[in-house]
Image 1 (spheres, rainbow, N blue to C red):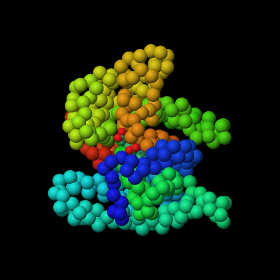
Image 2: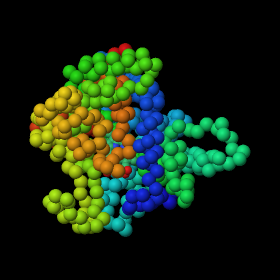
Image 3: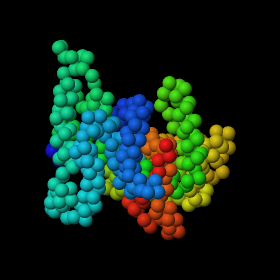
Image 4: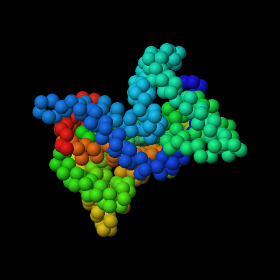
Length: 409
Ligand code: HEM
């Protein structure tokens, strides 16, 4: 892909994205919040613009959420200009899907055939080529500007763009600088990671809002109160953990029950290794991972693990804060939140390689639904009920869920 090769070893060519995402992007998220909400509301209005005679608009949930996550993330990654370029956003949406689709084919393809199958499955890398076409000139120019900064005669008042592309450029190696093609490859790799998981998690959260309708009023009241408090403080960004504990708990329960990934924290042993408790020995090349789906449904960790208990985490936090044990609602012994990285909440992975961005913008996505739309899951409720009877596996995929929404303003 334009000379971009993903190395089999971490840090060989720098891990600039860690600082760009973990520090710079995270620090800027509160400032982006009003833009997130603006883009999301505009997207919901567009997606649900054609109501039927009963006043409800019908839309397939997962494709809609993928388009929305793409649009919001495009804004944060690439800035307003590219975010409004339809050809670019279409390619940005297609790229992660094409990669996942191709990866499944490649797993069962013999090595010598892989280049041909990869080309066929990705329509000759169509999405990647389009992204490269638009991004490469911008990246080249910005890299030149970065290199010229500090030189005599450089226009110091030139504004520095506020987006991930810029932070990834600014944190890329200086000593052995990457080519602009290498830089674009790095940006596309991070882009891939930013869309898929977030879209799945958001889609399940919205499906759960539709299914567990009884929670909506409480969540709505909490958001309305928090927004009023923010307004009083001069538009300060919402602090999800402190001001929206019910929403935080609801999202965690949705993640616990749906767990889009069965396992997390995959690690490959580079040398023979024995676990400190001597339970397992690994040979070089062996893979280990944490069975997070099984952990989330383990009755010794979560009381009634197959019941969707929207506010179990908030109740547990209240009890921990009072110095009590959480009576088996959740594992652990101290208050925690959606973005806590811990062995008891492994969805972000672990240690140095934990997700570079525990995405607080996840909570921004269900908010417009709660504020503006009255929604029901058409076949989602039925899929979930059957899924539980099946022992936890869904009988209908999230692709099949349609939400039915009516504007309430
Ligand atoms: C709900 C959404 C998300 C979930 C559940 C999630 C989960 C994860 C997990 C499990 C890992 C592997 C950690 C490990 O191996 O220990 C990871 C890594 C990563 N994630 Fe996320 N992620 C999400 C959203 C995002 C977003 C929105 C971004 C970027 C804007 C992102 C960027 C990354 C990056 C760059 C890594 C690699 C970290 C490293 O190797 O140092 N993720 N994520």
